[in-house]
Image 1 (cartoon, rainbow, N blue to C red):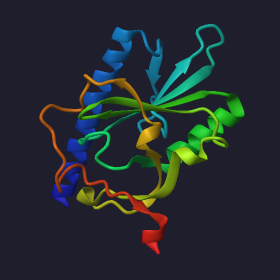
Image 2 (image 1 turned 90 degrees about the vertical axis):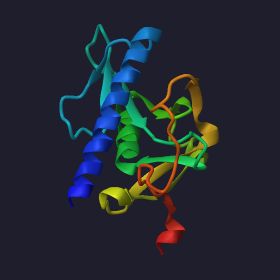
Image 3 (image 1 turned 180 degrees about the vertical axis):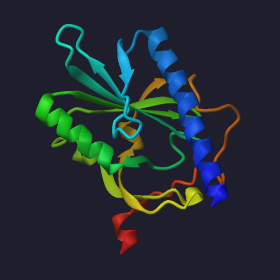
Length: 178
């Protein structure tokens, strides 16, 4: 139990440090001006941008950090609850949706613009964090060919590599769950 708590705290620290790095990068490049972190620590989507005139949300941004190269797996997974929230906010309010993934070999993004026409860009499955004794939960896996390289010089960490102890995420398919 203590080891799981340590792993969770390390993962949170890793994510927090990389979020700071990404926010500094956005500022330096003039991207996502006015980006704000949601106050609720348990918010499904972490960041948002308000229209400076109407003060209404116009863009949701999710930042994810990984301890491996972008092409180590054939796709990149994140919780289906995030995708569902993005679809809802895009459909109901026309709020842009961007997911950033910081890997050891660069910063990539995936933009959700039309869920009906983007079904081929991802698959559904389950994901769990075995190192933190996590339980499997529904996930979306965006295929690598749909990731857009933003900056190859950014890295989630220096001298990192993937091994059995990486970050413990195990992508699976629905077929494997049966």
